[in-house]
Amino acid sequence: MVLVRMIRPIEANLLVPDDTIFFIRETPRNIWIRLSRAEGARLYSYTGENFSWIPGMPGVNMDLDNRVNAVGPEGQEVAVRTIRGTIADGRFQGGTWDSEHYTWAEIAFEIDDEAILDDDEQYQELKRWTESVLQNLVHLYQLVTGEADVAGTRIDHSAVVDVWVANRYTFTPNRMEADFRLKGAWLSWSSALKPFFKPLIHADKLAYLCGLVQGRVQPKVWQRLMLEAVGLSQNRGEHDLAIVTLETAFEIYFKEILQAYCESRNVLELPDKRGRGPNTLDRDEAMDRADVRELFRFVKYLTGADVRGGREGQAWYDNAYEPRNQIAHGGTRGYSEDDVRAALEAVNSLMTVIDRTLS
Image 1 (cartoon, helix red, strand yellow):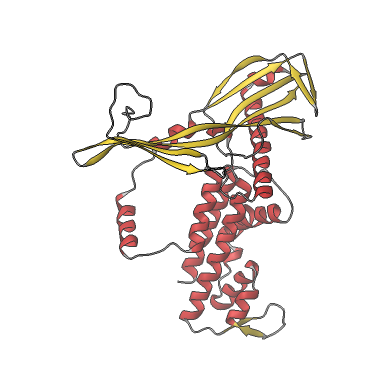
Image 2: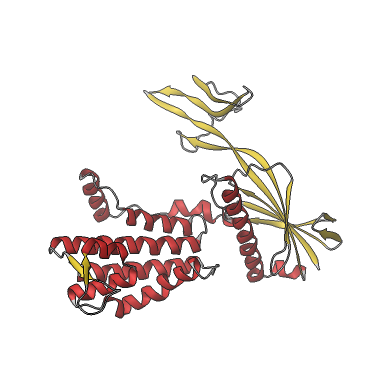
């Protein structure tokens, strides 16, 4: 057996005492985690890649050198933002330096053989596993503290992950001692490179955006939830939560478009799913009681179209509705970004069919 230690930063500021240790009996292996807080900074440069304004740079005189201080509970002042620069041609030239706390996570676990770390597929699986364990720890921290502003953690957002190994060690819930040697440092560029290769918005979409802005249009709740779902998956690795959010968005959209259809055609009653024969309910009451399956029945009742029975309806059921139920009610975990992408495509396709049917 070999003891592996990974050291990586977490962007979240977890307010636990330094050197707090967690020992988790996990499948397929136990994991030891030590958390320590650290201080860094976030820069915003108004001069592009010219960072001469950064505090401590020699030989540079700045007209503006201001600090925004926060006052702690005991009256101590802490600089949380530094603004340095000069005014040239009527414009501010410089930048801001925001002090930020983050967390160092030291993770240790056993593997059968050091060769596993040299096999890319097995190593990637180890990284995904450690990410899921840390993500769950952050979720539990949020649950206990109520700190909703604490972001999740993705290992590919860590620029460097140091990996150490030891053949001689003691590894128990109460004690970890080892003669570690550095195996290597895993460098990640994916999160840094991605923003630089985003294409400019297409002219047609830009014109559409201008029209929406000028018309003071506000996104609907279901539209914002769909965007939130994409962000949960792509930015935070919260694929399970993304699928639940995506299906919630779809069901809000479905009720909204059905309500609009009924109002435009003066439909005042809808069939009561609990009754038999011609029993009906007030439209609003029926909508309030209806689940998503009943919404499909309303569409068939109103238009004769069986949108659920088509190819798009089946894709939605397989890729969005059923996974959502498995996550929310069956306790299933471990969906991937590809699963979220499939759910999003299925929801969008079915929405197109519903739009066309109720237009």
